[in-house]
Amino acid sequence: MNKQELIEYAASYYSVGPDYPWPEYDYFVLRHRDNRKWFAVEMTVPYRKLGLDRDGNVDIVDVKCGPLLMGSYRDIPGILPGYHMNKAHWVTLLLDGGTEDGLIQELLDVSYELTASRRKKP
Image (tube, rainbow, N blue to C red; front, side, top):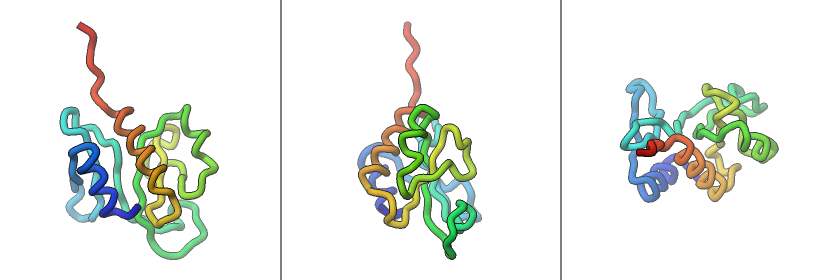
């Protein structure tokens, strides 16, 4: 999955488009329409800032995962602790073809649910 496919998936499944809160960067967030909470943030960062021994930059997306799921994903290639986010609750997914599209979609769904508005009981 690449950046454009991520945008198309979010539009199709969550009816949201990218929001660009930092005008000086081409980074975007995906947020709920009702509570405005982020469920994903896309950035371009150097591989080395992610602790990877590679030159160049990579598109990434950070999604909320939660500490209970972190252990399940820790050893999967293309998934790292959340870059620039709380590493106990967020993971970074590489958008360089190294992470399976289905897994990216699954984790976007998890993040969307974890950040959704909670309805209070009457």
